[in-house]
Length: 342
Image (cartoon, rainbow, N blue to C red; front, side, top):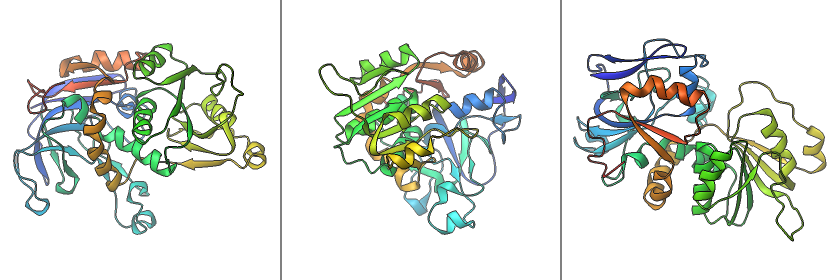
């Protein structure tokens, strides 16, 4: 089978490999999304990844072997829950398997789904509707990240919300919040191209560094919730600055190093900072259930469907600053079937 394989910093090769063996069920992969973690691996900046890894954890495909214990039959269209928890640490024992002390992920610590076939643990297989496009179905995993962030923030729909960072997660989060009834959502970014994409989806935008809350004829006021989705030090400062007194700051991005935080502002204005990491199994299922109602918005995030043999070139473009929100790799000759498009 063909697979996109990491061979070292900035080097991907498409290789012919034997069918994956071992425990699990074989999945005929339809398509696989490229995410920020994949780009980090490509650049050689992920601490756990080693060469010879098959990339990809945002994939959809057809199950070739049934899973009787969960009611999945051969031929079911499935996605992979990519988190692998130990089940024994304190977090796992207290219902927080998604923040397991030694959490591993498919496509990072074990072979992923950017290949013609993937072998997936039975408990990691979840069905998705047959009529969803490939472009939408591959977005379950990042959508689950956004569902988790909205749940942590306890969004009710009445909040004024700012999102710092209009990348794939920031814009997907805006879609989730709008579906939950939030009326005022402002996205901020340094990229004018990404802000333009957000505007085409009907969102209010502001250039990074500007006053996000100001509207003509209105007194500027802070936001009830600010989601930090940029992963940069200036974004943390901006998130604190734009939260109203008594507001919440939700950290959706994962920072790779300590960042300076104005603790006096937190105390004087009684701000709350809430951390998030990936999602629970229940939230992964929530994301799947949400797909049909927001599929048209999610489909518009995908700018390119590429062949495997374009992976090296496109990964390099994305790491060099290409502003695509979502690029999808075709893993079978006709990824539109059975997904109905994409």
